[in-house]
Length: 123
Length: 193
Image: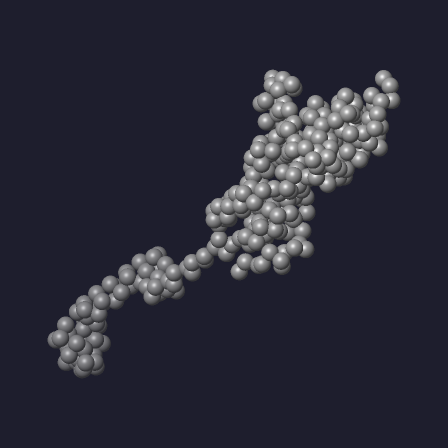
């Protein structure tokens, strides 16, 4: 190979540097297409701050249930309520017998608790 | 609220990409202006075809937009990431075109006589591109990045997933082969014999 058939390194470097200075400029059309792509992609992004829905406030009965201990406690309360009503309406025969034994037949329960007769009459 | 493009001129590529991922569209405008010439220039040198290079540039930038929401600053440079994407897209296209004879490459278009300096310069660039086209893909990739785009050897190593020593070896062999391919076109280049 003769000298005239060779490209020395300096020549090659100058040629490559010249290529760098003459890089192809993008057309306005290409820039517009790339920006349109960016806008289309951005349209699909999730909102930066997602909406946070506030939790529903518990209702009055839910608060009451929670305060007394839930359904098991409510069952106990219901039983006590029914028992109380039954006791309240039941005729206190045993109490009459007891007072007759101690005080004699001349006294009635109404003598000691006048209001009991009123309650029993209405009942 | 969208910031103006001027407000973002001094911000790094990585920060702009993260901003775009968070809905700041002006970030994409600045990145488009800043990076499209780099991407297009590299793709053009790799493919030797302007129209195909534009397709690759658009595709690479589209992939960049899509990755924006997941981009984490400090993990990679945007330019390194783009060079890798463009390299892969170009090499895929070159492989798909394999089998096309080298002599099927278009002859340089006729130039209007009268602007001799411009004509010689244009012929030089066409000869350089023709010589680049004869290099193996990886050599061309390394030579274009190092000697035309001025990318550092460590960054090229990162893009090509090889050692810095391998990059030096590739660029050295690439330049030797380029010089041989150009020697035959010496007259076209306008150098003294």
